Length: 232
Figure (tube, helix red, strand yellow):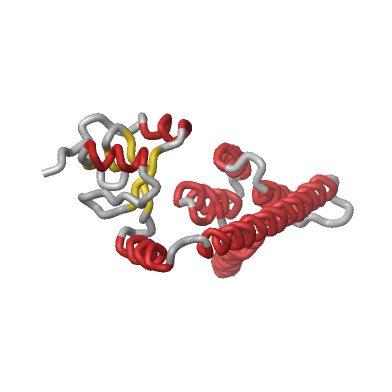
């Protein structure tokens, strides 16, 4: 009889621990995307750390779980998900966590901190989104003004180039080099880009050329040597 009871008890405990593991990982999978835009879950390394942490909580290895949480914090040090996971560790380490448990306050503080950080993060994301939308609308308005001043045939050619050249229809030319195709352009064409008010095209890739500003010239100097090709 004792053996039967022991076997039943073992089976119940095994099923109970399995339920805990499923609950833990399911909770993380459901809650993390809500509070983190799924940053942690999109990173394979941090996703594995979350899984391992859930396994350690399931196996009651709370020291190891805290170590994994520390490693996770190195990737996302201010992430609200860290407080959520820490709260789960405290909860299961002191299970059953009742209103009289001394660790109850610590558990509630972790959850409050996670909620506060989530709200702050959401507010920042919404503010950034509003700013980006305003910038896009301002750029659209500026583009319409510029389009109105461009000759129709030039605009048609520009749109065709942009579609054919992966969105890059206008490129810098520097030191007789087209920065779109990395090919040398004839000196005469280069001088025309500098002096003429007409649109000059690269004879190789047919993109529209313009002279680099001082800041753009600095960026262009970072190109790898040996990338320049002579015109055939």
